[in-house]
Each structure stands twice: as C-alpha cells, then as structure tokens.
Length: 491
Image (cartoon, helix red, strand yellow):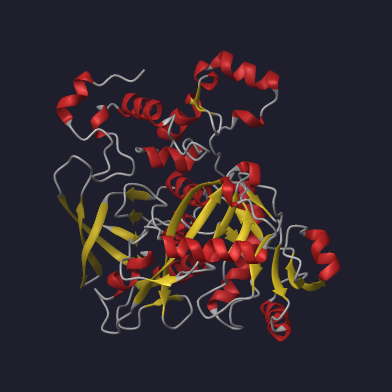
C-alpha cells in the first residue's frame, strides 16, 4: 500500500517525487518507458524562460517565474548544468512594436525582473549575427539554458535517495476508485521478458503522464480532458557553431507558441527550432522535410548566414497542449485524492520545480503528513574528468584506469563515466540511457564510433548478453538475432 503513486517520470513527475520525498510518505513513480526522461522532457528547447509570455494571473505565469527563481539553488544542490544567458524577443522591420510593448508590460505584471526593450544599436552589439533589419528586442536577463536530461535525472536520483520507488517499463492500463484510495492496474513489459501484470494500491494518485495525461485523467473522472499532441522539430548544430549567438533568440510569439528560436546549449552546441504542428500520434516524434524546411527558413530570415551546414542531427518532441491554454494542477473535483498535473507544455520545464513544490504542498496537506528530519537535499552528478586539472586527472586514472579509456571521441567520454552512469541509482540500461547521462553518442558522429564499445560495457556491467542491449528499451535491440550472439565479438 503506497501513500502516493505518481504516474509519469518526466521532469514534472520527477520534480513532484523529489518535493514529496521531503515528507514521511511511501511513494512510487510508475513510468511506461524504460528510463526516466523519455517523453517530452528529453526533446525540448532546453530553455528556462523568464516568464513574460504567459497570460497574467495564469498558473503558467506564476509557476514559470517561481521555477526560474529556484534554478540557481537547484543546479548547485543537484549538480546539473545551468546558465543564465538571457533572452531576446526580436522585432524586425514591419513587425508591430505594440506587441513588443505588450510583452514588456505583461512580463512586469508577472513579476519578471530586469526586463527592458533594447534598440537597434545596442541589440546588434549584443548579437552581431542577427539579420540587419532587426530593429528592437525585449531583453530578459533572467532567462537561461539548462540540460533537461541532467535536470530530470537529478530530480529522480535525489527522490530515489530519499526513499521513492521507481517502477520503469510499467504502463498503467486502468485506475479504479475504492474505499481508502485507488487500485492502479498496470502491465510491466521489459525487453525480452514476458508481460507481467502489476497491481498497486495507493491512497493518492498524481497524474503527471504528459501527452497521456488526459488518458489517465479520464480513467477516473466524468469531466473529460483532451490533450492535443503538438510536435516541434529541431536542428542541432555542431559545437563549431555553438557561439553563433549567446542569448536565446526568439521572434514575436503567435497563436501556436513562442515561435522558432535559436539558442546555445549548456554543452556548447547550437539549437534551432521548433516549429509547431498539431498531430494525431502522441509518440509521433518523426521529423518531416516540410517542418524542417520551416525551421531552416526561419533561421535564414532572422540571422545572417546561419551555419546550417554544421547540423549534426534533427529531432522532434511532442508538447501536451490542452485546449484551455493553461496548466491543470488540481485535485480532481469528482475524484478525491486524485491530483492532475496535465497540459504541461511550455514553459513546463521552467516551471517544473515550482510545480513540484505546489503539488507537494497540496498532497501533504491533504494527507496531513509532516516533513522528514533526514531529507537529503543534495545530489552529486557523474564525474566529468574534463573539468579536472591535469594533475587531478592523472591521479584519477592512476586510481581507476577506466577514466583513461576514451569511448566517445566526439565528446571525450570515458569508460569510467559510462560505468558510473550504469551503476548509479536508477542507472542506465540502454544506449540512450547512457547518452542522456554522459553525452556518449551526442557528438558530431552521432554514436557512429562509440555504440559498439558502449554496448559491450552495458553488457558486461549489467550481466546481460549483447543481444539484450537496446537503443531505448522495448524492441530496439541492435543485434536482433539471438543465435548470432555467441559469434558476435566487439573489437
């Protein structure tokens, strides 16, 4: 019997789990994918928004600003990369300046600090690669960039350290109301294993299922929700293009969102995107030529000679758009002890710390529980040898030679880092799991060189044959024929 079952291990579910782990509760996170951070949280703009865009008085506005203000302390305590690079909403010749002024006033009412409009001369000194007809911009110094993988994994690992249980590869099929709480019926479907029925009893359910949050909500409520999946496509550019802009560059927003942006990443790449297209598939993360053409055209319109020849990959993410336009964070009116975190689209990443705090306060009050005295507030990430001095690195290699064995040449990731990613709490079990934790495979060759060696390490450290090593769980094995495995040798 759990006190709380959280459905969904994206950034919202993991932030809620971390905040609730401050309390004396028995908590379980249920996730249909093979790892945390496998949905919207792994494919987004990696932006911490300042908070000027959301409607005044909305949850999006309130929680965006609160979440932004929490980021510095969280990045320090949980050891994930974050930088306040600032953002610019750029107005070009022919645009309506009144819209820029409106954003400024809205941002001030939302409580965003240090907002101001910069004019053409100052703007082009800030960003020399903007198109010549950029005439003004709303400058938000408090905006930032973050690694969404590291942030989500940090929340999850810290929650785990504080006693939260995680059930991965476990898909919720039904929820039944009963005296004293809920019965959550699920199916566990690990790769290469037979499906297994899972039944969980809980006093409270928290719905943080992202693009599937309406499906989960509609299992218990007569007041139905509808999530419309909205896909956005991106280009990721090589680190050689990473300094093309310093600020996050937006154009004036429209009815589909904040528009196509250009931004540096905390890892030194350049990101361009996303477009916005409503789609039918909740997992429809394939890119299309016409959507990427829109992204390319926008970059060429807004920037002088954008370095699009340096693209190393493209990808797409799904946003959980809800028709009312705001986050839904509440106890369900006709299902007591069932709490929704639904419609968490942009600025959901920015707001996630504040969402976690808000939901934890609601649930702890409902359950009348007190905070623990032994809450662990900090977490140490994977050691990055590239940040050590030469003397420190040599000493590390002397103690553990695995840190002297480079596996991913593009990102200079060592065997020691990959082993750490596998062995740590909620450790990686797939190539993508290793990639999100270490960046092995995220460089210029996009895993063309390092995948076989990484597979070998996963096989060895997890005690599984190579044919059971997958790219991303499920049916994504790279060596599909079991009979070939005995003959397959890496090296």
